[in-house]
Image (cartoon, rainbow, N blue to C red; front, side, top):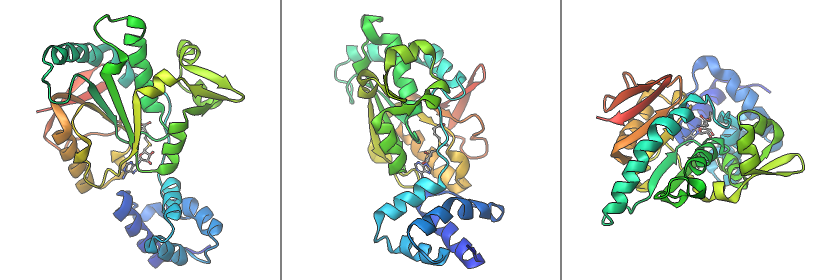
Length: 286
Ligand SMILES: C[S@@+](CC[C@H](N)C(=O)[O-])C[C@H]1O[C@@H](n2cnc3c(N)ncnc32)[C@H](O)[C@@H]1O
């Protein structure tokens, strides 16, 4: 099916307007490869017709399907490994101290919970990895004065489709093989036919929500740790600036920000200082 210049420009502007994805001239194939199946499924005769249907917004499901098709949802348990190691080795001990201090001052504004946000969580492997690390560290009374209930993880994404899969907690064998250590699989998953279901204790720490990062998200409250990995790369510079500004406002003064390995805030925001822990860069508020 032909994609005319005007269809390409209309669709990419529309997509940028609602999800922030910036599609350059040389990425025309993104529209044809990813949206053609939707054009066919909704029985549109052209990309122009799809554009009008999307713009009308009469079918919210069509917009959801478009978002699921055009976004890159690639993720895995313990992706890149070292950020999760750094979280476990460097950040958790600091957080334990924070919890102890908050418990002492019961008048703390948001109570003693430590709030973690996975800001583009895709199908859930990233927040589930964090939840397993937390349970491994503090479950079964391993640290007498700290309990899993002292932690709360919000996991969000723009795509309802990936969120449904994340909420189901159901993963295929391949997804488990790609990253879940054997002892974690035994402890935190049960088998159901060809799938694996993540245990209730792991799910219990996480609340899944739909959040669009190109809109204001200041209503979410404050956080001690934000993971926003492998999504900023898809946005233009102004969108990245706005997102990082809001992260700065939402992070507690001693909070931590994790970005993806290829995402650098140099030239985008000077509101954070970078700390290197081995291969991991962790940002703190200046
Ligand atoms: C490549 S995945 C990253 C998943 C995970 N953070 C990781 O690093 O493995 C990028 C995710 O960002 C989401 N996304 C794209 N645009 C978004 C937006 N405007 N607001 C929120 N999430 C968005 C996509 O739906 C996708 O699930």
